[in-house]
Length: 255
Image 1 (cartoon, one colour):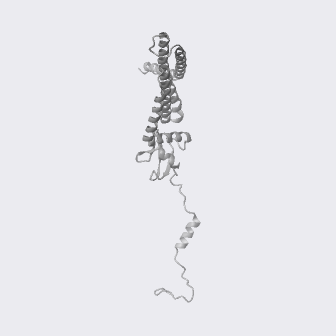
Image 2 (cartoon, one colour; image 1 turned 180 degrees about the vertical axis):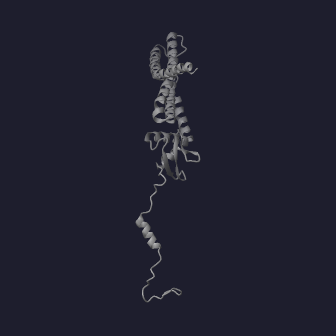
């Protein structure tokens, strides 16, 4: 039974590998087709001024169809390039940071495709861009803490003060003193530490503002030197019985 199932499993794995290798070519071909569709749409615009005009209807149809084709192929190229970037970065930077790069590519690419498509349809995009900029400002102010954690995570990715599996010691006022544990995950907004009894999530901004270093191993703490111990013992020893002449001894002490 296992011998019959094994070729199917091997075939599916090979198909998955082939798909991963051909994915960037699909995205590149879709990008080339999107650029070609935009060029043809701009060329057709030279023969008419407005849509729904009684003259040059054929050029209007060509321009509109090419604009729609640009939107479709541009979206396919954006999704394909974002997926490929995530697949490449997962092995080097981890799943969380690869997801951040994928979201950024999708956001920038989707906004670019939308603006160009509206421009091909002769829709004024100035007000749209202005409204999008104002919305971005308001959203950034409202989500300042969350965005700070996201950008702090990107800085941690570039600086790499520690990696998953390291045992670190963090010291900062925002953490209430010291916090030590083993790094189990470096996420988009949180760094998760295994402190022994449980797993705690520390915001990336707090980690970036903290002093981070390897946790000292138990048993390697500095011991006082032998001379210091002898000096402390001599200071703790009772005074010599010989007292200077002329000073009476306290009552009850033998002479």
